[in-house]
Each structure stands twice: as structure tokens, then as C-alpha cells.
Amino acid sequence: MTLPVFDAAAIERAVTSRLVLDTVRAALIAHAEGRTSVPPPLHLDFPEADGDCHVKAGRIAGAADFTVKIATGFYGNPARGLPANHGLVCVISARTGAPRALLDDRGLLTAWRTAAAGALITHAMARPAAGTLAVFGTGEQARLQALWLAGLRPLGPVLVHGRTPDKARALCEALAAHGLAARPAAAAEAARADMIITATPAASPVLDAAMVRPGAHVTGIGTDMPHKNELPPALFHRARLIATDDHAQCLDHGDFGHAVRAGSAAEDADIAAGLLLKAPVDRPDTAITVADLTGVGALDAALASAVLRRLRE
Amino acid sequence: MTLPVFDAAAIERAVTSRLVLDTVRAALIAHAEGRTSVPPPLHLDFPEADGDCHVKAGRIAGAADFTVKIATGFYGNPARGLPANHGLVCVISARTGAPRALLDDRGLLTAWRTAAAGALITHAMARPAAGTLAVFGTGEQARLQALWLAGLRPLGPVLVHGRTPDKARALCEALAAHGLAARPAAAAEAARADMIITATPAASPVLDAAMVRPGAHVTGIGTDMPHKNELPPALFHRARLIATDDHAQCLDHGDFGHAVRAGSAAEDADIAAGLLLKAPVDRPDTAITVADLTGVGALDAALASAVLRRLRE
Image 1 (cartoon, rainbow over the protein chains, first blue to last red):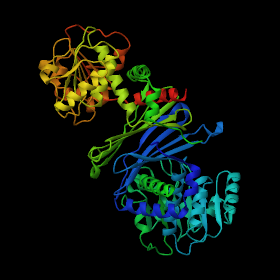
Image 2 (cartoon, each protein chain N blue to C red; image 1 turned 135 degrees about the vertical axis):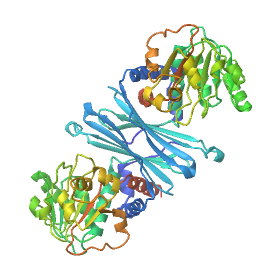
Image 3 (cartoon, rainbow over the protein chains, first blue to last red; image 1 turned 120 degrees about the vertical axis):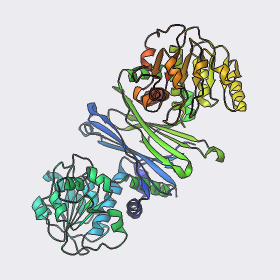
Image 4 (tube, rainbow over the protein chains, first blue to last red; image 1 turned 30 degrees about the vertical axis):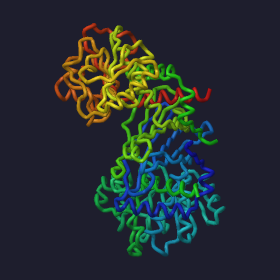
């Protein structure tokens, strides 16, 4: 029997945001409770082509499948009219080791699980009455974070802050097409929103901690490598509650790690994000809360497995 | 466009032993000359299913493609009528990062490149007049090593040594079907052959070093993990020439490493196997020579790329 391959179009047709949110919630909880296993990733560099390849594996204890995810980024591609990123997820039986299917998803599942994790955590940690959202960044994740959060709670105006005005305007139009009121905003205005999500590749903080208002919640999505840093250490110092999706990973290469190394947060100041999804979060209305999400490989396993089940139904 | 998947039958139809030997020879030379890159593999354990998963990547400098190879071993499968091993090779463009094809080869390419490497090195290091071959082990690799070496030089009788007499007899019959004279032999007799290839999962040496005759060549194939050990340290002490397919790897988890740790060989006593394929090997007729092969990821990349080219022709 030939191994079945499902392409991005088939995956998009089969999957609902409900499936993604439910799966990611359960996987984040499993990860927080130590029921996942995620070995160190494999990494290959292609300096002559400005490219890299990361291979990540993940599994959830007791699950029927595990996954191996291959992701490449070749940053000279766009200049040649090609996408910079490619992705491929191999779903393998955890009972027999036999490959079950390939999801030629071009990074779609990674984008969705990242968006779902950000939306779930932001919704869980923000004040129930919080309405205004600011997104820092104008890329695909900035768009998805706003849309998926809008699926979880009513949003007031969405403020979009980006370095390139054209891109900020384009994102506002894309959000408007989904019924969200959105407009470009300066960093100072965006920093005063009820909820702030940063989804940039920034190498130095995009947010002025002093401008963040009491009662605000901030989720950082973009810091997934040691040289990146979106959220300032001073924000962690002000925060009453700090959530990380993976303690060791956020300490190693997340915004939380930058804050700890700067002396602005204790190494054990964080709580596992998944635990905050189990029950309403106890947070005073005037507290600042922060979530640092670096991406958890076990989410890939859970989502790919759920998507494959749906594709086969 | 859907990612093309080629199964084992298509690969077997397209590939010749000549293609495999030429590709593996060139890749071993490239590896010896430092023109390959092989990051540390990714590893996942499934203790409850007696299984494991290894993911290896490899590339050859300047090549158009690289590969990510996923291999699983679930050792309870045979009792349920399933194969223990599964394999899948993803061929990816080293120029754009785009996946080009999947080779659902069930481990075939790994078996072939291992057999080709063993045959090439054994042929290069053995005396030109060496004729008798002994294989220790009765599995698929023992069979392939004998057959592929027979394609490179005329063989006298093949002596097969295995712990299970029935399996040794079955391998002799399989070799006879390919025109090779083969018979089961005790370890003491097998150890006195001109050429010895060990292809077992042994955790302690299968060969008595004192019985190996001057002028013999020994190639060890099976020691690919720290707890395995086929060749005795004393054999390395007697050897005039020691080849390793990857110095660091053989030192870490090959028979060569056992010999170095036992004080029977100096840490720098070995030469890169690939270098011995470039010109006739200078070896006295009375010398003992040894090759320790632990498997090189870059061979996977080279072979998968060559096979894909042939499949597309």
C-alpha cells in the first residue's frame, strides 16, 4: 500500500477551528502535566542558500500516533517568487512504528497550533471584560492571532502596529474582511490596549513596559530563537502572573529567559500555560499578566493525529 | 502539486547495484574528505511498545538535494506478523528547501548502502588473492554483504556462522540460489577465512582474535550503538591497518571505540575508509586489516538523491 499524502487544500477542507482549539487545549494541558515527550530537534544549515532545516518530533503519552515534522526556511526564496517556508508532517503509529500518512501542509498546522495556543492562553489570562486588542506584527501569525481570539471572545477595535505602514493597512483590511474593526496604530497607543499579542521576528523589545496599563495581558509569540526578543524584561518585573508553554524552552530561548538573565524575573516565577486552561484564572483586575509561548512539539503530534483522523472519516 | 511518493517496489525496479555502488563509493570519499554534513540524530523511545525512532539528516556539499530519514524499530512486531523495521526517506531541495519526493522504501536504501559500503571496503582492503569469505550473522545484511562482495570479486566457498543452525542453513540456501557455494561453519572455522564480515546485533565479540590468520581482512557492520560490540579489542591490536567510516562515530559507538577504551588501539590509529577507495591499498600479504563501519548519514542523502534521479528518468 502506498503511503497516503494529504495536501494543504485537503487539510483546509477537513479541519475546523473547533477541532484545532480543542486539540491544542488538550495538548497544552498534557504538556503541562508531563504527559508529553519532545526530544531535542535536529538542525541543518545551508549558509550558501540562506536556509535552514529543523526536524522536530513529539508525542503524547498513550496516543496512537506520534509525528516527525520537517520544516525548512530558505530566506532568498521570496525574491525568486517562491515561498520561504516549507513543511511536512509525518504521522507514525506509536504502536508499530509504521508511517500512517504524510501531511504536506506547507506549515499550515504549525501556523494553526501557534494561533490556537496564543488565542487560548490570551483568552484565559486576560480580564473577562478586556476588549481592545493590539497586535504587534503584520504577518500571517498576527492575522491568525486576532482572528482566532475573536472566535473566543468579542473584541473591540483591533490596533495593528507594524514597522511598514502598507503592511499594517493590508492586515487591517484582511481583518475587516472577517468583520473585525481594525486600524493601524503607533506603538505607544498599541501598548495601552487591554490585550497585546506580539508576533514579530524582533531581536529587541517591541513594547515599552512602562506604557502597559494595569489590568493588561500580553502574549509573546515570536521569540523562538535565542537571538530574538519581543517583550522587555521590565514587563516581566511588573507582571503578577507569568505563563510559559515550556519552562525549559522559554528559559533557554524565550522572552522569559531574557527577563531572568536581566534579573527581572526569578527562574521559577512562571507557571505552565496548560495549567491555566484547566480552570478560570485567578487574576486581580489591576494586575498585568504575561504569557511567553515558544512553541511545543507535542502540539504538532496531537494536531496532526487529530487532523488525520478527520481526513479519514 | 502533490508530493510524489515512491514505494519499495518502484525503487527496486529502478535501481541497479552499479548505481548503488558508484553512489556509495563517491559518498564515502566525500565524507572522508570533509565534504558532508551530518547533524546529531533525533531519537525517540517507546518503551511500552519496545520501539524506537531515529531521524537522521545528511547532505553532501554542493549537492542539489539533502535527505531526512525516519527509521523505526518496534521489536514486538514480528510476533504479530508485522515487520520490525520501517523507513521513510524525504528528499528535499538544498536550494529552496522544498520537499521533492518521498521514498517509502521500508529501509531498503539503508540496507543497500550498508551492503555497498561493506562490500566496497572489504574488497578494497582484502588481499587481491583473498577468496574465502566468512559471514557472522544470518540476517538480511549477512546475505547482502556476501552477494554484493561476490559482485566485486570471485569468491571461494562462503562460510556462514550463526547461533541458530536453521537460520545458517537457510542463508546458505539463499546464497546458493545466487550461485554462491555456501555452507554453515563453526566460529573457529569461520574465523580462519581470508575475509570475515560480521553483521550481527552482538553485545560481546563474536570472533576470537587469536584465530584470525595473518593476511586476513575483517569488516564489522553490526556495531551501531554503544552497547553493541562484534569485534574484540585484541583484533585491533593485531591489525596493521584500521579503517573507520566515521572517526568520531566509531570512537563513540563502534568496535573501534571499544578497542581504544580497552587500550588496544590508539585514538588516532584509524584511517577514513573513503580514502582507501581512491587508490589501491598498500597492505603486506601477511598483515591483518580491519574496517569498522557504523553507518554514515551522508550516504543516505547521496543514494536517495541518485535513486530519485533514476526514478524520474
